[in-house]
Image (cartoon, rainbow, N blue to C red; front, side, top):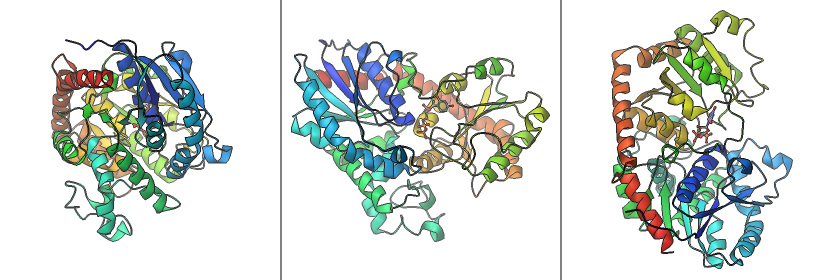
Length: 448
Ligand code: UDP
């Protein structure tokens, strides 16, 4: 039996990055469908479009970021700044929202916004955390103190291939680090995230039990708080779009003209960037593969270029319709299209999960942080993809595309991916693991 809600309100506070906004707003939709009223607190930076969510209230807070701060390429510096600059405006916002008549059950905050913990505590407001990445990569973040102590995080270059015994099957090069102006900023951010997640009233995952069972078991031991793996969120029902960039719908009409399982879908998400040399190797690798491809080239993807001006003259004409390039795709629809045979991805958690949900094998090209962990799980735990390693080179790319699209190992990856897709469908059904976890979450929030 479904738990009944009596119009209690939940406050949601997403981290203002695409890969965090999407799952938070999907979760808000899910809980709204269970009878809760929803308020989305958001920064002025990267604010979602309220017109797509007429059933939610939106509260904008000033993040105080200068234009230079908001456009920095140093994501870690940006996240650290948000944790400082949003504190006072968030406090004022909560004071206002909590002074109304309507009961507020709890706050659901992105795990990275760890400063919300202290503010919520000052109002005695229960704070649940949504971690938008996978459980396995979170455990790698939680292991940072040990990894630091054992010297795995700094000066990695000489031991990249070494296995990390504390975190099988990760190698040193799979650890979730990122180039940043000051590594201490990364360590502090991770420390804040892990500590305030542990201190939270509950932890929600856009993942499902059958996918990350061992990691969830470890997590439950190390984090003695209520834990709710209720994902994959985007499969509950078709949700409104929280995309910050408009989707190019020509993708779908182009895919409609392609043969089943023939297309390589290529996208590296909303943040990752590549050099112009890498860009050209990818372009030629795709062209030489002879497979049709749909390629998302987001403005800003290629360092130093506005868009695709560095493509060789005549490249698109030469392909004669075999390649379709867009600035942003309706990714979930694309992955669900029968023409798509593989996803060349940077392995952001949402992209990884969206691919798993549609049974699409992956060509993994992780760039930083949890993407490396996710790629390792795709290739060595779930065995539904291969990783492009040791630099991008067109001949190698062509060979790897063939391995996934044509060869026996690719067919086996596809079979395993289809098997995982079935597990997704089961976990969401009545009595399935995510469905039960959602029931517990609803009851738990009602008891807050
Ligand atoms: N996405 C999209 N269109 C695109 C590329 C990505 O709608 O052309 C969406 C994708 O479906 C996913 C999110 O953007 O939900 C990207 O999140 P992810 O965690 O994969 O990567 P990030 O952008 O955080 O690196």
